[in-house]
Length: 447
Image (cartoon, rainbow, N blue to C red; front, side):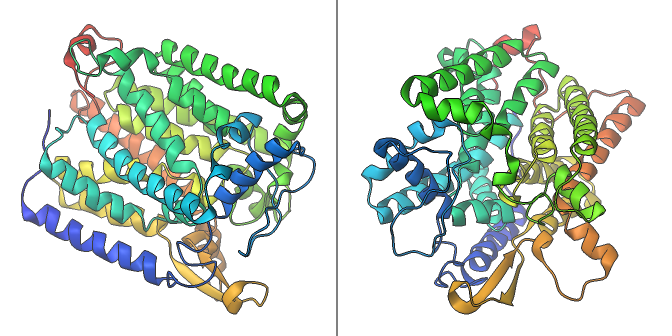
C-alpha cells in the first residue's frame, strides 16, 4: 500500500484551501439569503417527499405536477424518477421538514467525505491518519465544486448514487483474506439500486462488461429488475405509465438548449441554436461518445488505472444522458482526487496545475441578475456554465459547454497517459495495480 506524504507542505495548504472553500460556499451567496443560501432550498428532497406522499394518497405520480403545502418558495414539480424511488422515499413524510432537510444534508456531507476516502482506498492508499486528514480537506474543497454545492443546496441524491457505485468497485476488488471479504458477493447491488432510483447509473453495466467484470453486471442487472418488479407489485398503474412512455419524455425536465443541460444533447442544441436537439444527430454522437469513453475505460482498467476508468465512465454517463444538470457531474470528486494523486506521485511541478485547473472549471462561481420573481429579487447563477454578461462569443461558447469539454480533455489526457506508458515500455501504476480477474487479486486484500 502507498502512503500520502506527511509533510505539512501538503496538509497545510490543503487545510487553508478547505477553509476558503467553506467560506466561499457560506458567503457567495450569503448562506442566509432566502432560496439561494446553501441551506435555504432543498427543493429536490421535497420532490422526493411529495412523490412518497402521492403514493400514500393514491395520487398518480406521472400525470401532472406534484406540490406539497409549505411556506417555502417552491413551484409545482414533475416526479421524474422510477416508481421504485417513490417507494424508497416513503420514510421522508414521517419526518418533520426541518429534520428531513438536516438529516439529508448530514447524510450528503458524510457520504462526500466517504467518497473521497473510498477514492484514496481505490488508489491503494493506506487508511492512515494523514489519509483521513487529506480526505477531510479535499471533501471540504469539493464542497465548493458546483455539482457538489448544488447537490447539497437542492437536497439532490447524486452523492448517494456515486457512493453506491464506488462501493461496488471496491467490493469487487476484495480478496479472501480481507476482513470484509464476506461482503464481496454483494458487489453489483449498489449500482443496481442506483439504477433503480435514477436510470442513468445503468450505464455502469456497460462499464462492468468492458472491464471484464461480468458478475458485477449480472448482479447489478438483477438488482435493478428487482426494483422494477417491486414498483409493478406495489404501484402497478404508476409503473405501467412510467415504463410505457414517461421514461422517454426528457422534455418533462426542460428544453435541451438550456445551459443547465451539460450533456452532449445540450451542446448540440446550443451549437445549432434550437430548443430541441435533432434526435438522430444526438443519437449518433452519443453512441460515438459512449464507445470512446468505454473503450478508453477498458484500456485504462487493463493498464491498472481502475479508478480513472470508473471515473471516466461516470463522466461519460453524464455526457451521453439526454439531460444532465450540472449537479449530475459529481464524478468530478474522484477526478479531483485523481488529479491530486497524480500531482503527488508524478513528482513533476506542472502536474500540480491539474487540480486548480479542474477546480476552476467546475467551481461554484456566482453571478447575480435582478429578477423580482425570486426571493431577494434576484436570480443567482451558480457555476461557470451559468455566467453571462459581456463575454466574447467564443469564450461564452466554451464556458456554456464546460463540463463536456472537461470530459473531452480527460479522455485526451488519459490517451496521452496510455501512450506514454507504452512508449516507455512500463506498466501503468497507481490506480489499483491488480486486475480483478488475475490470480493475485484474490489474495491481495486491497480495497
